Length: 235
Ligand SMILES: Cc1cc2nc3c(=O)[nH]c(=O)nc-3n(C[C@H](O)[C@H](O)[C@H](O)COP(=O)(O)OP(=O)(O)OC[C@H]3O[C@@H](n4cnc5c(N)ncnc54)[C@H](O)[C@@H]3O)c2cc1C
Image (cartoon, rainbow, N blue to C red):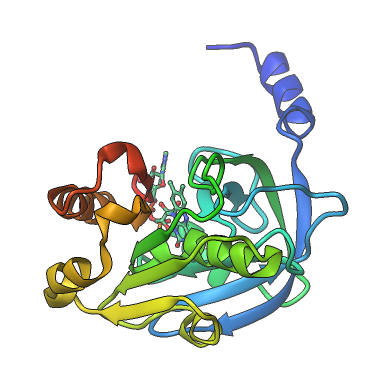
């Protein structure tokens, strides 16, 4: 075991090493079921790429393996604030801390990461976004980024969910083709949406079981694996 002095020094230095920032809660929107959207202030000069995720510390807690979760930023960099939506139904100690968080409450964030972005996609590439439930969060960021920057990417959204369709109102105001479906409609919707001859890039986000099964259905329909980007919420 390391001597306590080292532990103490590491604890003091950690926020500087990790570039920890404190953000304030400015909006809470109950969505369907136990899913809630939180908007936090964006730190001055904070730079991220649409589709990335950050590390979010449970309110009032120190950084520890038990108190930090990965959370996708659902806003595009051009929007105000950092939108984070989460399903509280697990009632884990982490989620309970968010349930108790009140307006103006502060939380810590650090370490942006993720390759679920539009990087290296030539203009004109058609995009097919496939989200399983809460997996829509990084896809909202990507779609809003395309719209706000006027990027040349025709897009289609397939959102598969059983309880409710997060961001339905915001996204349905946009131009892309959109399908909000249950599991039984997945195969027929993919048959209708995927056109391998047009060279689309396919983005799939959600639980590990969801992305693995959807990836295999997409590959079966003639899209090469190299054209598929995955965001695994269970990794
Ligand atoms: C890239 C990415 C983006 C994500 N984006 C979102 C999002 O936008 N919205 C959303 O709701 N969820 C998102 N998630 C999932 C999120 O990080 C949580 O895993 C999920 O919300 C479940 O958390 P929980 O506290 O309810 O469940 P728990 O089962 O309590 O915890 C989930 C995970 O946290 C870790 N953990 C928990 N307790 C401990 C412990 N004692 N010691 C060590 N590790 C522990 C483990 O890895 C565990 O599998 C994302 C995940 C990834 C990887």
